[in-house]
Amino acid sequence: MSEHPPVRDWTTDFDHTDEAWAADPFPIWDELRRTCPVAHSDRYGGTWLPTRHEDVAAIAYDTENFTSRSVVVTNYRPPNIAPRGIAPPISSDPPFHAGARRILLPLMSPQVIAKWEPSTREYCESLVDDLRGRDVIDAAQEYAQHIPVRVIARLLGFPEDDADLFRGFVHHVLEQVTLPLEQRFLGMQDLFEYLRAQVQDHIQNPRDDLTTAMLNAEMDGEPVGMEHVGGTVALLLLAGIDTTWSAIGASIWHLAGNPGDRERLLAEPELLPTAIEEFLRAYAPVTMARLVKHDMDWNGCPMKADDWILLSFPSANRDPAFFENADEVILDRQDNRHAAFGLGIHRCAGSHLARMELRVALEVFLDAFPVFHLEDPSAVRWSGGQVRGPRALPLRIG
Amino acid sequence: MRISIDLERCEGHGRCYSLAPALVEPDDIGNGCVVGDGNVPPDQMDNARQAEANCPERAVILEEQD
Ligand code: HEM
Ligand code: SF4
Image 1: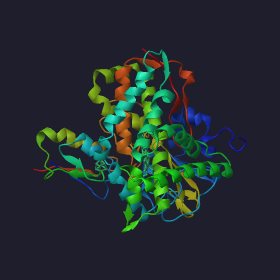
Image 2: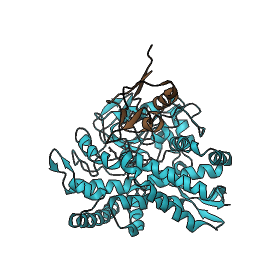
Image 3: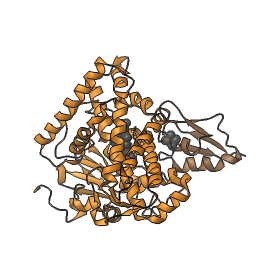
Image 4: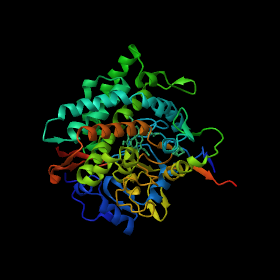
């Protein structure tokens, strides 16, 4: 697309949808951290990229100067639907945010999520059963991809057969960010039409699931309203799929390319929870965004109202000023205050779910396929944009 | 040693109760909640230190006692 020529100079013209970023962003961030720790690009109408942990944290904590009104960088600025935003709580700012988040947290607490573990395991086992006996599989497309879709469909109480539809919505909202506004809008309409039908069905047939719980939710003694319900349900559908798919895929990719680490996990399975935190640190899939609220000088950067901030939790996680041997994957890393699930008030509400899915997915995979290698490293393809993970991952199993 | 959670900073990442389940448990929204009086028995020192060193918000507080 002519609007997005390849990036020549990352310090002045970065673009997170560039192919070089998708394939290997780490050297780009390392270089920026050293030479230009809060870089600026004119793309998307003006975007800033902090790459040090210190700056990423400061912006995540600063809800006075930065708004979450939109967290996906595109060429246009969404209208200000204060205080809720389009998909509460991720698009909400204080003070409204706390109430919207309070509704969601008990529905996704560690205790609630634990109940979904057996069915998640069963599903992962059915996936590996279908792959057994093959020489080469695509672990991204034939395994990792399916797990979060199925799990979130069950939690929301949506038809499990609609998996392909969900994935299409997610792809449109999170990956096709360079499309013209009109086409973006049409895709969103499809998503909202679909959700409207599902929510209607839950109004008529209430049941024990997240959608019904949102319909019964109250803020300040009042039902939250249909826009709020629709926005949150859309968020749960969008926020949990590409992200978890990416985390599972990146972990398997690491183990495929580092047989020593794979063998160590087989020998010391109790290390898996620690190793998972390290995979989340080193291959954090999610970059968030903020909009600058007003013209200001931020630590010497002349920020303008409505400039984007690409809030790179993945780069913060690789900052050598914050982590020892930041560029190495150390399975038993003891001190790991990583920010893969964000920092501050918007900490991923699905983190307990995501961690459960990741652990079960890896346990089942390693159990079924203790030996696997990259079939063709050059055939591995990573998604760019704000959610980065393997989208093609051919492995030789056995 | 005593362990406590700074409720102003805690955002419910849950690292503390995963690493030191005998010392911290989740409340209904997934924030960390100290079990009992917060005194850390000798066999839990390691877990307490790990909980502290893995909280992204620096909300786990350890205090030495005499
Ligand atoms: C490994 C997988 C995942 C990663 C790395 C991840 C990452 C993140 C990050 C970085 C944020 C912070 C947003 C911000 O600062 O603006 C966030 C927020 C959120 N995530 Fe996740 N996420 C994952 C999986 C999930 C899942 C499975 C769900 C639920 C279905 C989910 C639901 C949410 C929600 C509702 C928020 C908004 C919380 C708020 O604004 O208060 N995420 N996620
Ligand atoms: S690890 Fe930190 S933020 Fe997370 S629940 Fe424990 S104290 Fe709270």
